[in-house]
Image (cartoon, rainbow, N blue to C red; front, side):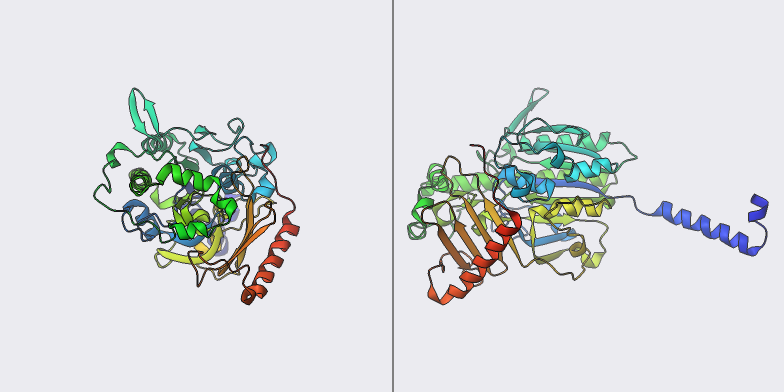
Length: 461
């Protein structure tokens, strides 16, 4: 047989060409690894690269400079349990059916989460920190698991040592990376508690900003609060604002503690990146930095999230793919992207098949610098009402306009904002005759989404 193959120059060339092709295939880069760093309640504008005047996040800033930042990233529901389900499934709440803190993903949907898809594709998978969903720990999805469904604690005791959650997650990540199978790509979810309530920073960060004076937002005034509808003035967002930062003195300490927690997340991100460098994994590991929702820091007299205002729904989203050419790194894109886009993106980058029923879109073409048609608006839903203390909200946000309806108050209340002229959402134009046509356009778009998505999935309690 070998004599036959080697007879004549053509046969020799064919053999040599085949051998060269095999060598090229062997030299192709392996499937990328993934590390997803997800903070809890981290606003989009509370990072150094996004222009915050005080907080320093040099490690996340570096990831942004080496990757792609999405300036207009949003969640489809601004509450942790529902948003986290959307992150891993790529689906709206209406389609993943997690409407509260007690509900687990169904076994069928669990198999369609991006870590499950990657696990079936041969990835070594892990999850540490605040899983945030109800039910038992997911089976058959993660090879390594040290996560919890509830809020968890800011401090852990490990071998008699009391360490902060961000440090704990860094150490768990180090164990995962050092103990991983060398012949498998990996996907690791690192879910921080920071900067969530009760805002307890690492002791190493306890003195940060002590000499600084925090400037309250321009809309943190009695006038702006009085302009909100009564059901929001009496809502949980106001109650928590008064409890957490109802005086100027309390406000200063509240925001400083929040920012100190972010500093700990940044330190952790830097340590994880350094570990990837040490283990020579950096050149083939995609790093994602994001948050499960935004956060009010007093805007409109409110705290926490839930509502559809910008502070609540905007999130940071940085994707550092080291395989991108130099010319595509450090970009800041304006496209409207959503938390439901992460799952299809990671599956797509891994070369696996995106599950049917996914609502989100892969960001791979945007990362690659392709000029592709993209969404011009998105649908927002929030139905977790906390015993009636949080108004149920739905709406549509475009690149310029925002329509909000609080559909279960009597009578239903609407808001319309021109974000280009009114970025802080101070002037509700829903009752302005001059904007009646725009209101009707967005009402129509809202009804189209309702027909497409069907009725909401409501919490059990």
